Image (cartoon, rainbow over all chains, first blue to last red; front, side, top):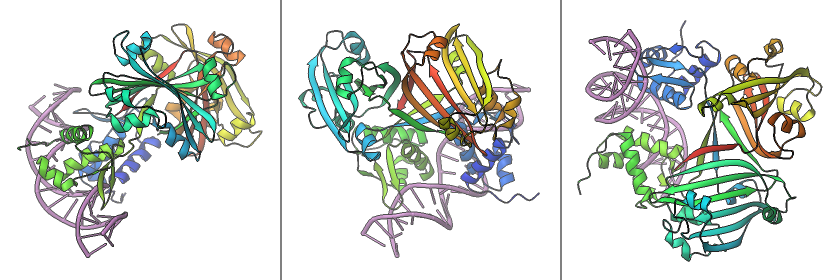
Length: 235
Length: 235
DNA sequence: TAGTGGTCTAGACCACTGA
DNA sequence: CAGTGGTCTAGACCACTAT
């Protein structure tokens, strides 16, 4: 059997995926080592390595030194959520974006927020509530606390025209964040702003963001009822 | 100024990230080309390439042939949600997993489901409702439709002991899927099974899965009230 | 200890694309 | 047309780990 040469990493990856999907290589089973595959495909080991490394990162293969490469028994599906700014989320779906500041105040946050911001109880922080609109309809409410210890310059910014998110992205480099998605019943005040019926179920996305100095901000986005987060899952 | 040699791709990546975060390389600005960086760091261009390629995949850099590499102006944050089986989700958090089949029937799905499954209106499909438990408390309700055209062997499986998800993962190779997260009010029946108060807000995760032959299954997981999806966001 | 994947190197050719 | 990133190659050494 004369297999034609496969000498691109994409080609190798496709062929490996095919063998896995057609169960020529079964879940849990070992596959040939890189050197052997390189010989079989007629390419360099580097090329095989790149193909297999990516599949391992996707969770489709499991690799260990010395013991070799196996087809993952229970591949863990991964959904990559892109978290755009609300502005680009609205504009990318063809809507007209609008922004309105509702309140802005320097005050001591409630204990749960102080905890999330990693500041002392009673210390002051900047609290911002704003409404995002799409095509003149309410889209989401942003309830944000900014840590004035790590981002002191926020004290001098009025966020009347621009969302704090965009300002922060440009001003303060962040290193990592945590996203927390949950369902909740819209508070009476939120219903007002969102024009939603009382007690409507809404999607909440809370995000805490860290920079080099510590927590930068904690924000809760409450979307209008009926909002969906849709994302592809790689196979 | 004698920069010490950086000759690992991780080292190059760290150094590049440092320069971006410290604004030595500003958002939107071009950075030196691969060959120059390789000379500066005292390593091979391949090494620089791997470091920069990964940063581009993460959305931190934007690369184009001929015009070079720039620091992304609006880096798009990405959250990688791992979608485990409910079993491992429960067990990994230290709980005791339980499963109970509620109903199993071959029947014609409602139009919306027939559409999602990509089968003709009136065609039969396998409908399964099951309850997942954690430590003897209800955890989530699974409402699943399986396409009997693409997965005919499901007709002969009773899903009394094992969740359909686990059976499908082992039996039918899938190629891609779409995830849809939303908030809803628990239906009266769901409240019964989940032991939840009426009208409680719940998180819904709907998933449609494709294999080589077309749609395999469409499943809606309704989590108990108070469920959170938590995920890191890479910076 | 030996076999596997992880990585680096130096060089090469190619594909794309802006000037 | 020329400069950039994208990729492949052949070879090498190393880190880890099952035996």
